[in-house]
Amino acid sequence: MQINTNVFVVTGGGSGIGRQVVLGLVRRGARVAAVDLNEAGLAETARLAGVGERLTTHVVDVTDRARVAALADEVVATHGRVDGLLNVAGIIQPFVRVKDLDFAQMEKVMAVNFWGVINTTKTFLPLLLERPAASLVNVASMGAVAPVPGQTIYGASKAAVKMLTEGLYAELMGTSVAATIVIMGGSATDITKNSGVEVPRTDAAKPGTGMTLTSPEDAAAQIIGAMEKGVFRVVVGKDARSLDILSRISPKKATETIATRMKALLS
Figure (cartoon, rainbow, N blue to C red):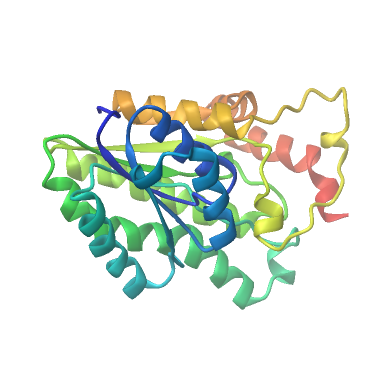
């Protein structure tokens, strides 16, 4: 997948990994439509990019299907086409057990993380299929391969994104569109603040425990690299890679290991 001169839509472009994906793409000569609910965040992304009309910003709630449909018209009117869609936007849930999580909170997580991806994918896929080479990249989480206590619904939403993307990969074989699933490990972003959630302090976060967080810049570079190569699956972060391997060898052991390590989340 060529980056230079092509047009990409990036959700979650107002902060964190999404912002760094936007910046990484424009640095390589792409045209980008950055999408986010946070207008101020998008403005900061545009300021940091400093590339003028090659970057447009669009305030969009990805759960609003009609607004997403209008977004496609905006992007084509401004940039002429769409060569790639990168769904980076996502939120987490409050750190509580499912029995203590109300339906509104569960529905919000599923609406943003899963239905948001459905909305953008259904809207932009016909445009991608018109291109001689195109990419669809969806960001999931290591929570999609092994459960984290207090983030069960979040994990379920990302597992749905994982299976959706793998299904799309199968359906798109033989077409011009390459589908890539990203299994994202822990990253140093503001997702908790953006989700309106406080993170309990845990032993796993203490210095010297070996827990590492991938920087947004590094994560973005790996995501862009995976899209460029058209790979089926990329696992970002040492923590995600280790958990991915363990979950394949022994799903029960992976579940118990994470539950033990992260049990303070629910204490």
